[in-house]
Length: 281
Ligand code: PAF
Image (cartoon, rainbow, N blue to C red; front, side, top):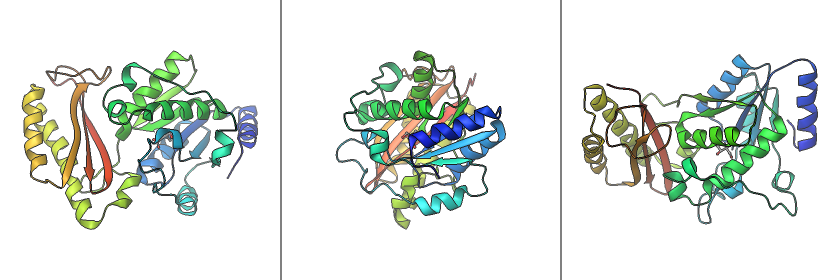
């Protein structure tokens, strides 16, 4: 467990000195099997794995759930034990944003639609902390989950635009047996809301089925998804988008890799989920 940037740099320098490759798994804690699958992927691919746990205030807008975001450090450390994390970096706020901090990363393009539109400032916060963590840990590979698909595109763009010699590895979304995508925010759902939330993954599965059975019109797929979602009025849709999986431009037809992204409030909790429909022709 490392608390300071200086000690993290030392640990990474020592590992590099032994010829080890470095993997980075950035998280905000409240670790679940999705995060652990990223740690496993890093452990498989890299010699030395750094997991970071930091709830990053700048990526939360005022009024969002920064103060109620689950903080479960002891359980997180237990979950990581024996899992192949060599270092867990848990800085406090001042260690990351030192007095006078004034530099933020503002990205256009893939950071603007979807989450960028609904959560202004979110990706500015994400890109800034990810760049800082990449600079501190200097990994060869950094691991991200597909559940935050747009975030992974933002990080790829960041790495490409700022010439960082780092590979970005995207790992599949991990789901509960009934389809619910794992999220640290699921802990804030009561039993009834958790049940209602299943309509998100159900509607995504329907989109895949339709596309696989030859329906290429995103308008038609969207209409069927909306009909399913309407069956659970407690789930308040924020957006449902079908977009080009590279550019996030709206897609009229599923004629190439297409992202179906859905975001909704279930009770007080904002959940996101997505699926990729690939080259179905
Ligand atoms: O996906 C997350 O948990 C966060 O957005 C990240 C990448 C750790 C940055 O705070």
